[in-house]
Image (cartoon, rainbow, N blue to C red; front, side):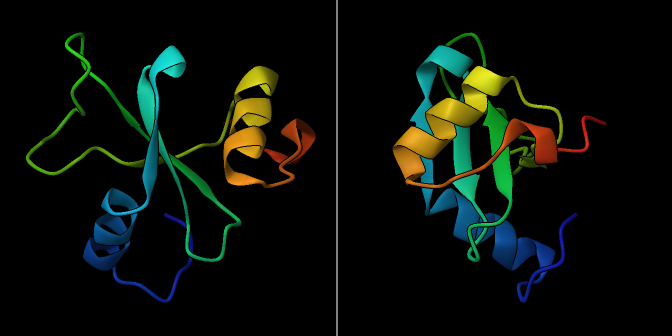
Amino acid sequence: MVATKFSESELYSYLENNYVEFENWGCLVALSEDRKTIFWCPLDTEGKPVQDPDLKWGEVTAPEPEFIDDVNNVFGTAFRWESFARR
C-alpha cells in the first residue's frame, strides 16, 4: 500500500467517495488525495463493484498505456506509462 496520511480504512473511505467508473475497463478508478497514485476496484459481470466485504481497492502497478491515457483525460493528470513498476 502506498504511503499516505490516511489509515488504510480512511484511504478506502476516501477512494469510495472520489472514484469514477471506467465501464470500458470494467473497474472503478480513484486517485490518492495527493493525486500521485492510481487505485482501481474491479466490477463484477453485473457492473457492480467487487466487495469482500468492502470494495476491493488495489494500487495500479502494471497498466496498459491506453488505460493511463483514459485516466489522464478524466482526471486531468499527466501519468506516464513508463513510470509504473509493472509488477
